[in-house]
Image (tube, rainbow, N blue to C red):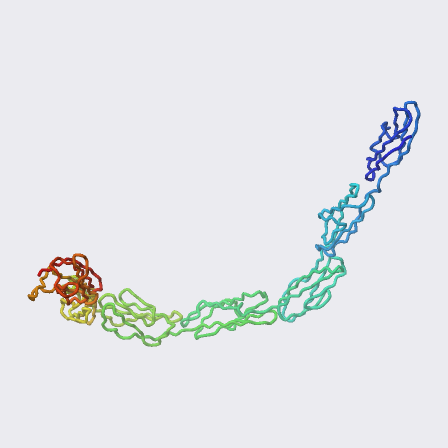
Length: 565
């Protein structure tokens, strides 16, 4: 007897089926024969495609039997797509869904976008690949080609410039997209063609919508001719002329209207003209364009008649480094040009100048006047200015610092161009002596001022600061005899340059014990012991003095005094 076990083909069209025969009975050994090409002679036949197979078995005695086996395969695994393209060019609203038949479910999906569902959504135009694997590991792959409409394009009339209020048609032409276009103008209304007549610059926007709702817009700029006053100007070679002089006038239009024509009011001449007015005149140029719009520009040309000017008389006598003011009389005008020369190499263009002469001498001053248009007057002169020398105050001091012991200073007068003197010593004292001396009563800084003058009353002054410093000294006896004989009975500190406040005197015995103290310099120690009852013992005592000088400086002195009875 023969039985079999087989394995069907996994995927359609493959040759991976197999079958094995199991024999019982008869006499070993068995001989096997499969009706395959080539014939297989083992119990198991492999690499089988789908179909019907016969296994023949013969035992050792020549007894034979056979068995039929059928190998099957699954249906062909097939893939197709349902494609919905994007509605508008460049949009991402397309989608692709898959249709799978054959193989053995369930199926696994892998798109080129890495998605794993049966469909992909919100995609742009392009190629999208899908690979499907069934439960037997059989695969099928395909690519979906997603298309899109052609770009929606609209062409509109070119930008233009018109006279204000002129009617002009505007046209739009659309192509691409999905056809059947709707046109809408803002402002303007519907339709692919409209007529407009703007009074000022206007932008017109045309929006086109196709069957799929795709939208495209384009603008038309319609400008209107207009004249800007800033675009018309007159350039004058000179705006102020002397009588019988000429100047060039040039009219210029800088706007963007090529139809503008320039016309002068005084002549049918070109944009550039030469004028020679005899009186002050306003020249006018008019700019007119094709729309009849006009601009007007004016230029004032002032004609200046020769002025009549005379100069003031002599300025008189002054001192060195003293200022003098000059002026003229007549048809003075602040817009005229003045050229003053002062006779010392200096000059000024100020109508009313002030000048300082730095050296003595006789100086002649002249004035030249130019009118606003440059008309020239002859130079004129007037009598000289006399500049006298100024007293030069100079002095020196015997010292710049003295002490209160001898606070006297001696001053030497070295002034020049001077003969009259006055001194201010800075402490309220004065002197008219040529070279005085002065003694100060207290310490401090003092500024001495010397005022010098001469016969021309041209004074000068100088100053110098000196200092009187505070000095002090302390006189302390080294012995006294408090024996009641009225001679040398008191130990008292004396001195000079010592302030009344801040004084202190202390007396200590040999063991360092304080036996006397006082804050009054006019007082002294009478030799009493600490209790003040009896005279202290003979011996050497230590004194300590604290005091301030007149500048509030603090000092300490100490020493020894012998008490002798």
